[in-house]
Image (tube, rainbow, N blue to C red; front, side, top):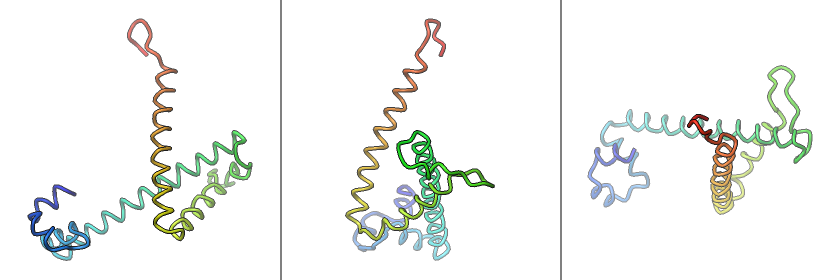
Length: 141
């Protein structure tokens, strides 16, 4: 996106124009309304992809924590037909729909803490994988 924006309009003109969304302005100027619509559709699909991944991973995490008895057993209930943790999914979607109403500062705090948590979880996962699959003498796993 940065490269496409930089190639479509000089940065001096974009900066001087003081537009709210410089990339959108550059694409609209280069490709017209069609380019802007394509850009908005692509961004929307990216956002929905991220939300879908968040809902799937969070509901599975709640499901696993419930099975390990860290949180109430209700989160481990599976749907009869689809065998998905439907209580966990409903809870995740409910919290996700309420969160924006707490304001930008609360969301920034949650994002900051989540970023730290993801970094710690990634390190722990890598360390665990390394510990479980130590190299043998022959150089094989």
